[in-house]
Every structure is written in structure tokens, then in C-alpha cells.
View 1: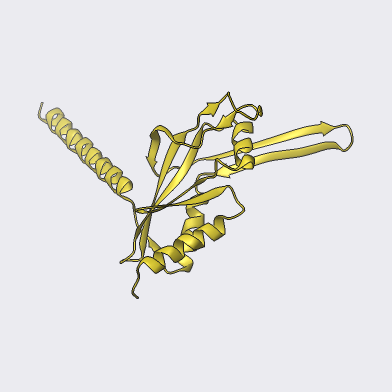
View 2: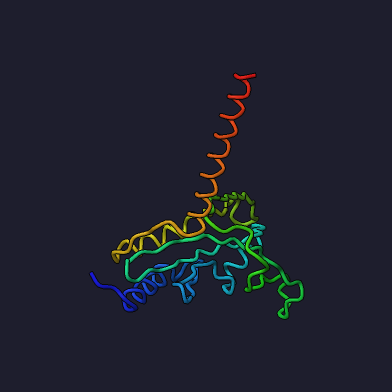
Length: 185
């Protein structure tokens, strides 16, 4: 199977189509695309503010057209609020990313909030919010799989795995040296 820019564009459009109507926006990048929370959408901004979220997760999707492969790296950024919103609506989320990312690699988190309220006309009502960091990744994976793409481990994850391997090897060597010294001494 040959692949190229048409395949890449088809994947980006597929992800964009699946993300439509949800809280995500797709931004094309030289390496592929980013899937992130749409901070320009008033519904999303309101939800982020109401639930006191302090971070926005972006999924950086790097594409290898020749191999029909992609890697997904989670990048967490802090949100910053502007108390001088021109429309008088209160606080507003800045759409730009703030500073260096707090996390690069793979984020695994979920949040859930349940609220119970009592209204004068309709009695008790419930509301809530649930979110998981893997939702955006799954959206990308499903779209990619449908078009014949496959996922491989990203550079940041490979580096972290190598560092962890070196640390484990160092601990084993230190343990063996301690054992030998203890037995010899």
C-alpha cells in the first residue's frame, strides 16, 4: 500500500469529523496534527472553569506517511485565567499555552464530579461531569485504525523507557555489589 499526503490529509479530516460537536479541535502541524480541548468554545471554557480544571491536555500526533504509522504524545499545559474579560462575563481562559508543558509522554487521569441540586419548580436534579485523559487518544486511534494506520511508541515514551531500564540495571548492579561486600565481609 502506498501512502502520502492524501492519506495524511484523509486521516486528519477523519479525526476532525469524529471530533466535530465535541470538546476537541484539530490543528494541523508540520509533524501531523494536535488534538486539544477547544478553548475558544464557550461551552468548553465554562466547563473548565466550573470544574476548576488547572490543566489542558493536548495530544500531539506525529505521522509517518511512508509507514502509515503514528505516535501520540500527551502534553499537559496549565490554564491561565484573565480577570479583565472585555465582555464583563468574568474570567476567561487564555487560548495560548502557558510556559513549558507540565507533562510530556503519556497521561493517565480521570475526573468525576456529581452535583445534586434542588430547584423550586422541578424538585431535585442531578448533574455532573466525567472526563478521562485517554478520550482524545482513543478518538485518534479509532479514526486511524479505520483508515489502516497503526500506532507506535513516541520518542518521549521510548526515552523514558530507556531511562527506566538504565535505572533498574543500576539498582541491580548496586544490589549485587552490596550482596558481594556483605558476603565477603
